[in-house]
Image (cartoon, rainbow, N blue to C red; front, side, top):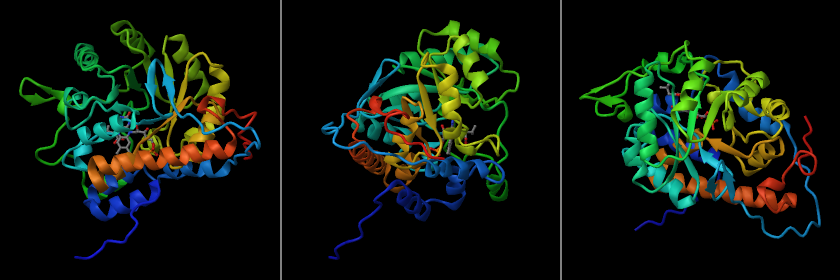
Length: 352
Ligand SMILES: Cc1cc2nc3c(=O)[nH]c(=O)nc-3n(C[C@H](O)[C@H](O)[C@H](O)COP(=O)(O)O)c2cc1C
Ligand SMILES: CC(C)CC(=O)C(=O)O
């Protein structure tokens, strides 16, 4: 018997390396890649490096509490699982493995409409879910998806607004990856024995959002907002929350880092609705920086996929526990007692 003394991944970036070693390179590229030159992918992580945290001392804050409530949904920490498509490309168990890990960690999973297992089966894990929607021009079909998400117990609807078309993914082109492999499909899109094609439509407008608003009493978050005027419009159209996001740099390349847009949007929204941020969050200190700049919580996309590819439910669980430990440590070192206490004024010496 040989003893395995390798320590394994000790942070979220290590999980990417571990996942890369295990994954089919075509699927690795699908998960890792962004649009075109991937400038926005790089910008998202780079933006966090540009900011510093200035800790306060002798606050006697004690060990921080990490729990938050976002739009009525309690969570053990201000980190959600961003919606990402096609988890069965990462691990045969797919989304239910991710959901079990989210449930064990007490965090909210935003289930993607383009999951490879149905929302009902994901919900059967007992995880706390929100449901992400690509608004489909067929309103009746969209309505049926919303009804299913509601019936499955999803507690909010996350409407992705940054996808009037698919971003141009050149790694996918090089790999000729344009279809899911046999046996894996968009499980929520099944209808009378065939699978509906997802439509990313440039015709979706604020008027469509009004229709959605009238279709559900669930809180609605708009995902993919980068312009303060759109944030204002979102609030005017009755949205309950905003996800400041550039889709992990996978849609329009050369957009700014989502973190760099957060202060502008926070100033425009003025606390009327909670803001979430995703894109490039890899460290507990990144979470603190996002909180300092106006987010109530953040979401992570790729790190969850790296955990899933590396070790299924256990891998995702480890990603979440590492990030939790880092966040706990960062808040403690900042002298903050709760995530809500972190503000740009008091703690986040945001030095560009
Ligand atoms: C492989 C992959 C698939 C994604 N699928 C979706 C999706 O189906 N719907 C959606 O709104 N966003 C999707 N996203 C974007 C994420 O929700 C999120 O905005 C992004 O991953 C955050 O950046 P990060 O990966 O740097 O954490 C996807 C991202 C990745 C990496
Ligand atoms: C198939 C895509 C629309 C899923 C997605 O959002 C992405 O890969 O970024």
